Length: 173
Image (cartoon, rainbow, N blue to C red; front, side):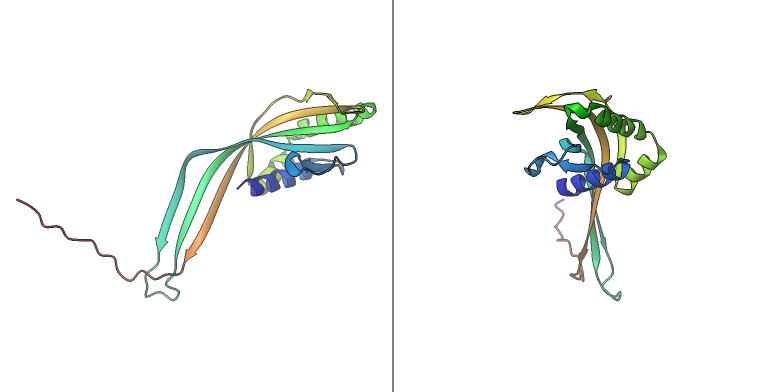
């Protein structure tokens, strides 16, 4: 589930960004890209409610004789989005981060989230959080977004079910 969620968040965020800015996941373990870049971190991914399982069996006399099993689960995912650049470029990364924060309210952002199976439930304000590496300071602005996410899967059951029998128990009087 997590790779699909991460891919969908990545696609939605890159669609919402106006500039051609590199976007990476923090868990990739890759070297730092050229500045500026956006760092995505999945904070939590919690199921909400019960898993729904549906089994639909077609009659064996139909053409295919196949049945289907469907699974569905809703999730709440919190994603931290960090906008990072060298300290001397603070104005440019600040404007990119502010335009992203403002853009979360636009219809085009809602459409980008919807197209990737996400719904924005809440967000924190954009916060400056400068970082220190071994050799330099990095300007960083972060925003935590809470998304709703729905995962569903459908599996074809090719085995025919010809009959169902229940054991008969003798009633004691």
